[in-house]
Length: 523
Image 1 (cartoon, rainbow, N blue to C red):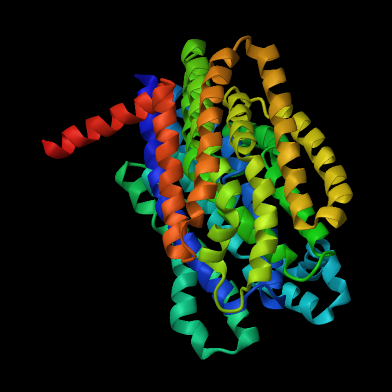
Image 2 (cartoon, rainbow, N blue to C red):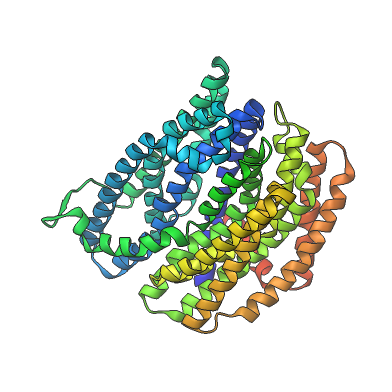
């Protein structure tokens, strides 16, 4: 029953994420059409890396990893009044910290821009634009991190669809800007206006979630004193900081690796940063819908099980999340590797985004896709440690993985270009995953690896057939609007048939869920 609930919640998260990602791709296509893969786009995406890094540190990354287990413990062991005080203390702390960071970030924009895009120093105009965009977008951190706090609260209260859909607010803001306002502006002002629309999207992200929190009987208020003590002395805040400081490194490995990728890409040919961004966006689609859906719902579930000292449910939930993430992501990886180039061309090759940019983007997408299962499993296994409030072990594994990533980037960036940077990320992610499994087994004993490997072997067999069939199916027509959807349909059908023939347990659960939903509709 617990696993059915986990899968159901992951389904809600996946549905919300899917809708959000669709809007995200509409936004990306509009940006690609308007700015291509030249100076404006490179400067924008380089500048956006900086607030995105802080977003991982103080938003849904390190902060959520520290906050959700502590909030779950308060929720299941304290009364509502104490829990509400804890939420107010957290909200106030975040608000104060983010205000200071936003002001300092805007002031230090020149230093930060030169750090993130070192290679731009040879082009003063490009560097100056990156500095200006960094300064404009820094307040985004305030809104997006407070929105992440709402997401963590709602997820722990078993609300999953709305928090997963809420990030689409950023896409909606940018889409509205590009369609309604950008045509009236010139090139330089167009990209600056896009940066301002990012801030508006962050504010909307927070705003659309808050009414749901209120409807559940909770709220967030600035309270500088709680029980006659300064807010920062609340015991819950102290525990979050103790957990959060190491988690800043552990959970932010993806963003730190992206930071390193951006620095390396700034030394490569023009358009490399943009190619990395778009390839990562495409890879993130299946990762977010399936892998991160189970990562999102697993942390509250594992935290609850640990708070109640139910290790049997804890291990079962972990095993279930891993198997389903692998089941969904192996065929996605095979599909992206097989039809990556036509998919990139269909989505982005319009306006100023040409065939050369598509080829460069696909070279990164191919190698990013190799790491898809590892990205998801690393996050879920890290959640296993966060659930029992151990943020130090994932730091050890992440630090070692980052060292490997840097070494591989330096070795591969010039002979392989952006593809080498993506390959370095994939290899480092598998290394991180293996280390997490090793330390977790030492900590809690057996976690059902045989069951995971057997399920993974079935999924891998079906995924191999998916990639081969999609690669052949995409050749049916020169019209990408026909060939790409047809290849996706064929690949998905082949995967479904083979996993059914192999009697994969995961496909049976999905079919049972579908039947139950159909019964509800018919009634």
